[in-house]
Length: 184
Ligand code: SF4
Image (cartoon, rainbow, N blue to C red; front, side, top):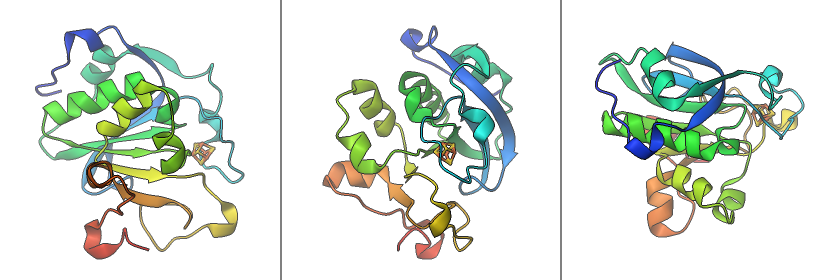
């Protein structure tokens, strides 16, 4: 990997990881690293990754070791935090996100929680992770609302959220990339 730097305080954080894809073009714009966090309590019927539900499976990595395993070439636009659900491991996911931001890469995250649930969380680590996300795709996968109309979400209830704008304006603001694809 090239140029990954971490805060010293993050070096000891570990994560339970289901897997990593080093070159994805389907989990956000551009070529991306996708980190699949192990563990998901949402259990959406029709989920494509049920192997990631069990909180006791996957492999445990210290974040520093995980970052060393990633192939972060100059062609990589950013990281996508997926799962499972990275918001069950917010400290670890935030540490990964921060390391990518230090390399001037962007950060997308997928979660089965809604934006409102995360914003109402009393857990500081959840808010720390939100503050490290550029775009969040929120909400559970709902089979009845399954859609192929948008490349970056599975069902139409899921919103593609511009997180910095939403935090700044204290209201949900949709990501408007890909010529307005993010706007319902
Ligand atoms: S949130 Fe995602 S990983 Fe979790 S059950 Fe739903 S679709 Fe599957």
